[in-house]
Length: 83
Image (cartoon, rainbow, N blue to C red):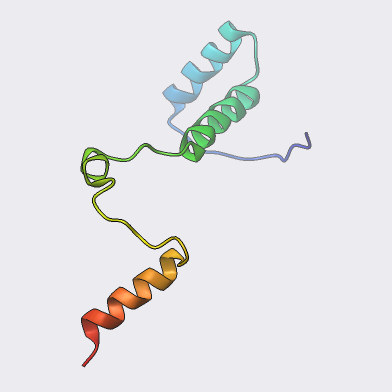
C-alpha cells in the first residue's frame, strides 16, 4: 500500500508515551497510528443493530412490496400536507 507523509500535533507527554508503546510492541508509531485508524474506521462501517424501540416496532406495519421507500415517504407527506 502506498503511504503519504503526515504531520500531526499532540501533547508532548502523549507522544512520548506513544513512542514507548510502539517500541514495546516492536512497531513504529506510524504503523501503530495506521492500525488504530483502520480499527476505528472498520468499527464505524459495521452495520449498527436496531435500537430497542425499532426492534419493538418491527412487524407492526405491512408495507407494499412494489413501492420504494422514497415513494412511500412521498405519498405519506403528500397525504399529510395536501390542502
